[in-house]
Structures are given as C-alpha cells and as structure tokens.
Image 1 (cartoon, rainbow, N blue to C red):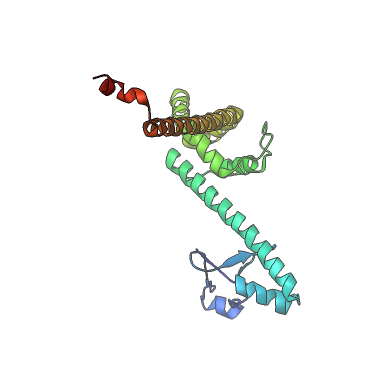
Image 2: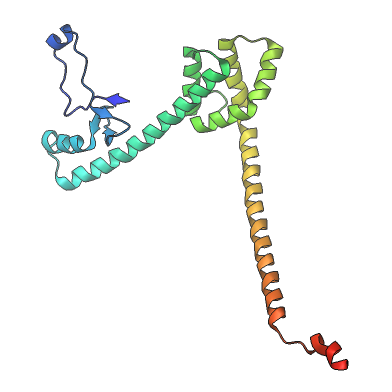
Length: 217
C-alpha cells in the first residue's frame, strides 16, 4: 500500500489538479519505515524527525521520544487494520457478498464495546475465531429461517454476541486443559528420566547374587 508523506511529497496545486495529475505517494508500507501522527497524516520516519525539528522546533531528545511513541502507536494501528481486513474478508467469503453499511456500523459498536448487551470490546481476531467455531451452527439457523444475505449478517452478528460469554468460558477451559496437559507431560518426562537413571545405576552396581549360580556350580 502507498501513502503520501506529509513532509517530502509535494502538495497538489489547483493547476496540477486541473491538469489531471495525481498525488505523489512515496511511502511503500511493504518496504519503508513510516508512522502516522495524531492528525492521521503519514510520514517516513526520517521525514517525521525533520518535521519535528524544522516545523515544531523540538530538541533532539524530545524528537526521539516522540518518534518512538508514534512508531509504537502506528504498529498497534497497523496490526488492528490487518486483523480487521482479515475478519471482513472472512465475512465476505462466508456470506458470498458485500458488506452492508448497517452491518459495518454494528460491527464498529462491537469493536468499541457499545453494542447492546455487550460489556467489553471484542477485537477482530476474536470475532474471526468465534465466527469460525459457529459457522456450521449459523448455516443451520439460516437454512431454517431462510434469511437473506444482508439480513442474515445482522442476525448472525447478534447470535455471535449472544454467545460471547459461552465462547470465553470455552476458551478458558481450553486454556486450562492445555496447561494441565503440559504439567502431565512434564511429570511423565521426569518420571521416565528417573526410571532410566535408576536402571542405569542398577546396571552399574555390583551384586553378588548375579554370580551365585556360577559360584554354586
């Protein structure tokens, strides 16, 4: 993806727009180090340093602190956008259709934790996981109720949110079982090592009874 750097990329003048020129975007998200400021404008990292130095008149120490802060925030935002894109792609594939505006509004409320009956925000990665678990169940409901695609998206979202607490309880049990299995595996490994050590020790020890038959002959 390409973004316009708010420092080094030139702004389009009216004359340039009238000539049909398109904005220059030199930030390549696949290769360049970049960040986004508080106003949502993008910069190359070095360009942002120059922006703070020349336009904001900040000293070098404050500049580096600001750059580190914006890089970390930008990484979080990038990850958020990636998970959102993955979830929306999953939804479009599952329903074989586009995304209605009303559904996207409801989805944003879920992400912010303001959806009716929801006590906390749900991230996109978790939503993808819940939908994946419930896919067969949702298909059965849709077949029974004969819901249309757009109508079904909103209905299914309500069903998914209604089962969120059960999903959390399921994941907790899954986590506990995983921890228990690790402990059992550790205990088994230790037991096997002890048995092996005892066997080696026993083999190396001299025992007169091993030679009694020969002595009695």
